[in-house]
Length: 81
Image (cartoon, rainbow, N blue to C red; front, side, top):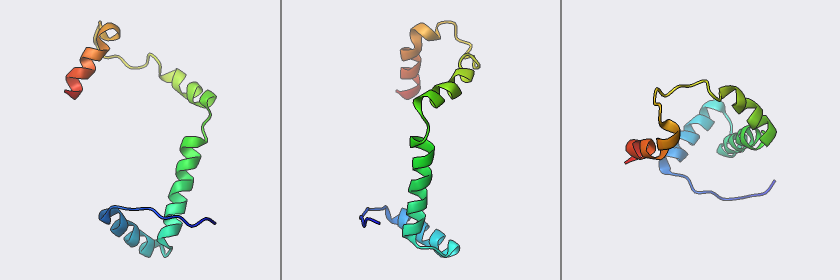
């Protein structure tokens, strides 16, 4: 294993410390497990698999707006500004 150092918010540290105590493992073990889960879910999906999953969603949702394709930037600006 490689030793590394990270900085956490105080609230993150307290939550990890409590969770580690409840599960009777070290904070390091919790962090390693979380990183492994993240790597498996985000890095483990190929571009082809992402596209395969996205295709069924295309066209399934309706905004009710007839000009969404042309005015999407304006609609986004209204939401965020």
